[in-house]
Image (cartoon, one colour):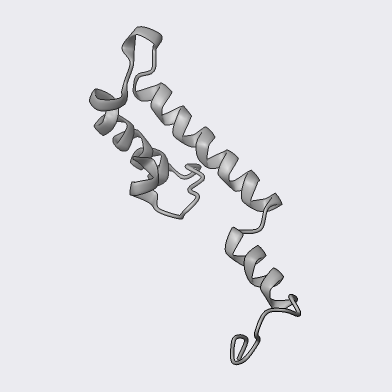
Length: 87
């Protein structure tokens, strides 16, 4: 649900506006996604979303997107027909 809302962005939720947006989003999805029995309520959902995006930022720093890796491997493959591919 969070990836549908923020798409490919990696929000940090460190400004007051972004924190308010995260809180509102967590409140909005709590009925559907919350599990009060294990204290996974608005606060837990918000923390989970922040953790998810922190891990995504860390992962993207160490890994190149898959399309970049494929393009580079094709570009240096001598058996791949290069006609107008890189122009």
